[in-house]
Picture 1 (tube, one colour):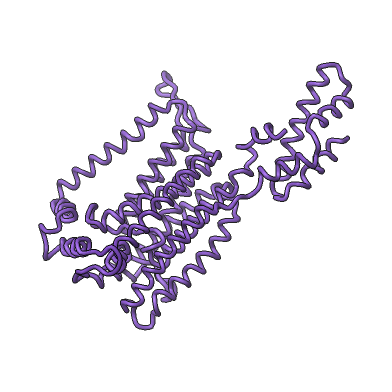
Picture 2: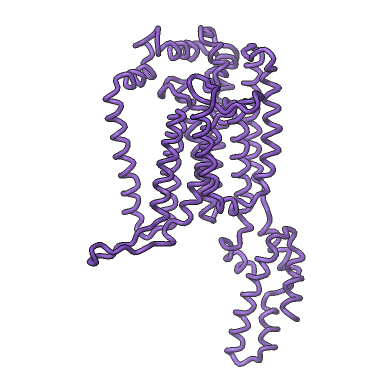
Amino acid sequence: MQIKDFLESVCKEIKYKPIRKEIGQELENHVEEAKEDYIHKGESEAVAMDKAIADMGDAEILGKTLNKIHRPRLDYKLLILFLILLCFTFLVAGIKTSSHVFSEGEGPFFIKTITFLIIGFMLGLVVYFMDYTKMIKYSNYIYIASSILIIYTVLFSNYEINGIPYLNIGNLFTVSISTVAMPLFLIAFVGFLQNVGKHKIEMHILNIETIKIDKELIKTIVLSILSLFLLILIPSLTSAFVLGIAYMIVATVKILKDSSKKATNLLKLWGVALVLGMLCMVIFIGRPYLLERIMVSFYPESDPAGAGWLGINRKLIIDSASIFGEAEDMSNALELFDEGTEYAFISILAHYGWIVAGLLLVTIIFISIKLIMNSIKIKDLCGKMMIIGMSCLFILQSVFNVLMNLNLWIEAGFELPFVSYGGTGFIMNMLCLALVLSIYRRKDICISSNNQKIVNTI
């Protein structure tokens, strides 16, 4: 039997056509290796080829087995958890709609949420079927586009909400630039990390000592720091804070998976972060109003008529919340909580009680666990870093938002992904979810990281 006929018989059983060529090439390599072994044992080339092919087994059975292994897989569990989380999104939309906090002519928030869901779903389908490995090749362009978008908005936008500039498109809808830029910067960061350690240049110091410099590492450090400054420029300190932590965690994964001096490099990475953190503390000490803001966040009674007013009203809701149903004391700030995007959790607690709020917390926890489990299953380093990065954005924002709503964290603009975001954030979260599902979908069809599966199958 000719090897061409054998490979065609195997590959026709594989339903996912894009992977056929890679599997065929891998099988051909195995046949050639086996043939060479038989030739070394004294067999003629023709006989060696026949025996090598025969060792592979029945072509149809092998093809069907490989088809089961190397096929796209939808993460149904994560999708179901997202659908549950979406129920809370509509609960918040219902609260906002019934509270009549939308502007005249704007329409019920419930309808807007459905509209954003449809848009996010359609764009998410494109991302889901996209090859994320090809997306990484455009990291430079993604970074540049995100930077230009921020700079343009800061310099030329004439539309602001609470002092933060938004991109106003045709007076039809507004775009939160930090919400768009944060995941895009993270994708670019992963792309930059891909090339770190691959190419180093030698530099001579006074013709005495030769050192090797990793240009990609320098590029990654400089551009990542610059991206954080751009987010601060908006200003969006919360986005910069969350993205900075995500950068650190993704870089840690890169070091642990692809570094010869793990301990040394981790010490350098987190040592620099510690130094920068201490510098930030010095800045806080030098600005008393920042320290006062932190103090008021945890002890709102220290300024009941000022910065602590929201915290006190949240405490009233927490103390009087029912097991199920409305709180006894709905507080003077309930309308603000219903309207403000970052107060979705306390709003749900006030209107529906601890059982519903607890179910929201449980859903967030399960999604976080599932995201972490998915990152462990991904063998491709690029995909692993991407999922871990997106997981960080979801988990960190969720944790800080819930803690803030419970008066256990600093009063800041942390959003609750999917639940409390506006239209732009909701769509971007949909795209991030689609990207995670896309990476998981391809976890068993990446030949470069699944060669052992083919060997075991044979």
